[in-house]
Length: 283
Length: 318
Image (cartoon, rainbow over all chains, first blue to last red; front, top):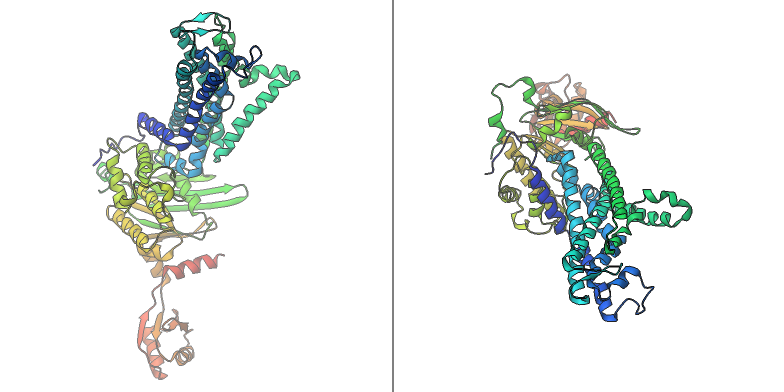
């Protein structure tokens, strides 16, 4: 027989968060996306190792990927940059779409509200799940990138040659990778918060995916129109090139800081909208 | 496995405590559509209340408002003594199966229930024990580790029932619990409801199966187009609706002629001739029939059935 605590009207938050993380990590779609993410640095690394460089030519190749040749520790940073354009936002948006819209579609959101998981706690619990997927997704790319970089591509004695031409030791190079990973996580959490807010307004997970990925594409288009240059500071994606700065020496922090600040604004707006909506949503 | 809450309840019961749920002036509109219109309903503690009504009569909307899933347009809801913003405080003691079972297809029935158990405030420690016990109780132990995706409609319904019974409750709300169940499943639901009633748990169940409600319910509420037509003790309602006698006879036509001649509006009915309450009581009816030379096998008082009551109520107002 279980202990019945008559006084308690809420399940412990830790148990809810653990159940949520277990649930999200057991989803086949999460596992498929994580496997795809791991394959990004592996594919780039193997491709470069086999051909000796992107396209074989030197000079004008795709800057970051070109820099990977013979310089393995650039690989995780390049792979994070590549994955940030579509695959990482897709992973985070999928988790956020399932978190509220997907639960509503399956009728399981009702169960949580009736338990009752308080509406505020429900947002915390769902945010924990999205954060878990985000962190794990970025770590998968970074770790697969470091391993592939060191093992398959190799480098000048475990050092990293920066875009500025200087050499960084192994630990300093790892520090740069960690910095880009942390910066990428913050950018993705901004995407996740907005996706969660959209998820709170619908019971169709596909609407969330379409809105988030469509939104990112529209941002990209807007950024490409010269007469709309004044919009640039408002667009989340316009700071997404800043990850490359980690490969310069000395480290320029301006763009990393401004893009992080922008992401935090998106994050706060997304979370506030989610909380407001979930307070009023019918179960 | 009786309701643990009964030990924590105060010894003195005020009139408000005798009601498990109470709604007053409850109304819900969706745009121009009125889903529930000014409903007053009491659910006495310990009762098994069957909520009847045609599809779209507002049963589910009423239940959703009772559980705080939908905000009423107007009116008040009181659930186990909690009301207004305090309503969720009653929910740990309420088990509910509303609008069909909701579970994740990629998890097994057991893993789905473990996830529900994690959200239950009243559970503590090892969650597997109550989960396995309730799976046994609803007859799903053998299928517990299969994925929900492959469950039949009846198994899904049983799992929904299991989630509602995961914790000892004071009130259990079952919205169409026998949907998709075979006769054995229907019997199981009936058994579970009987067990709950014996344990002193209040049950609110909605159904379109009148025989089902008549078999298990002590109280009944009939809804139509959002309005409550009648509510109260089932036996009292049926007794009030009963009356007249039924005569078993092989000479139906002669019997009808004889009774009409005696001033009683008789008509052909199943098993013979029915005589509604009127100028003639049973002895007068028998005398008239015997006097006319009609053979009488049996005379008995007509018992009302829920089906007749329901048909009369819903068609009168249609």
